Image 1 (cartoon, helix red, strand yellow):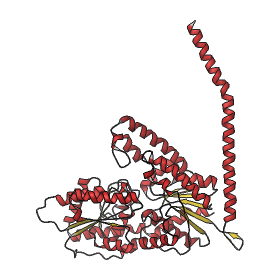
Image 2 (image 1 turned 90 degrees about the vertical axis):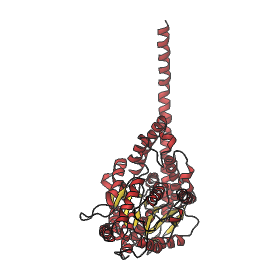
Image 3 (image 1 turned 30 degrees about the vertical axis):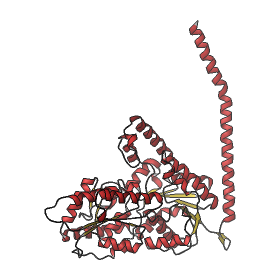
Image 4 (image 1 turned 60 degrees about the vertical axis):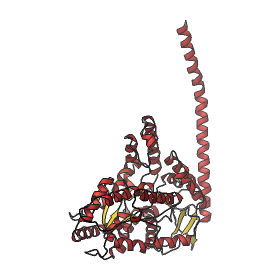
Length: 492
């Protein structure tokens, strides 16, 4: 009797859910149709806005090409790509109209261009229109203490919407890695879209760090100590990777800056037929003009690090390794050593990081031998590199490493992290000869620095000449040829 009653209840429950299936299906279908109608209406609205604002001359409309680069005044390698890309496009397509979406609202367009000239020695040959975005704070990592990747990605959609409402271009290129803006501009804006990827937002390396419960700047210690939290974060990363791949696959043209980035983007975006490696432009000629000296005129050695003050650059590793080097007991007194950290600060978070690095130097007792140079002009950067013996780089899985190339072209003996672009593309043998050194931990950096400093000046000169001979493939000219070839299809 009880079994029969239980079976009857189960049948009633199933009948109840079945009765809701058809109405639910109708409601879902209606909502989907309404959403499609709304999105189509928004697209038509934006297309009308685009036609009304379309620049024309002699009755012919000109192509409007826009770059999404919210931090175009940051002064890093990504910004050098932006200005070199604009310069190359203006040479080949002088009739086009060029737009840069930027969040640098505290400066004028002219000040941005002057800053690009001071830092990179790049001056554009035609005007650029700057569209200033007020909601850049939506992509600041400080706004999202938890679920940072998701928060910044959703924030980039809102920031992209603000950009799209101010200017609807014909061609859109995301040059800062905000892949979630690509479907927005492609499907609502009706644009042909491309992307230059410096670093995948999520990568298999990041998944491995979480899966192996290793602490890092993007994997807090309290998560690594908790297996449940680690599994939850791993699931979050995997779901995010799928969504990120779908957004990136909307790109009509995909350019990546290194072999390391290529491998990750191919696995995530599944767009191999339209993806190519375009090495970022390095002003190698400006550094190659620096004469090499066979013997140091100065009584000591200068060690220089070039890179933005971001957490992933891992400047603390450089300072700790340098302190370990200074504290080593030597049979003979070592020449005076000085560590110079050169980089750009984008915001207050970066400035706080510099303060933390200064405190770290004080805690280790090496503050007198460590100096910081922030947002310095290009000529000053050249002067420091011309005096340096060693160039330092410490970011794990660096996507490329323009600072590494600059150090090699300037004639320093490079010591970079044994991973990513430096390992796969830059600090590689040239004609069978060594071009620099790689390390992956504090002890290894200290030992390698000591090894380099103990070499004869003639041995170091040989390595410096090899490095210089190897960097021509990263020149501005090579970048222009590869970049223009990749984006050509966007203008058809």
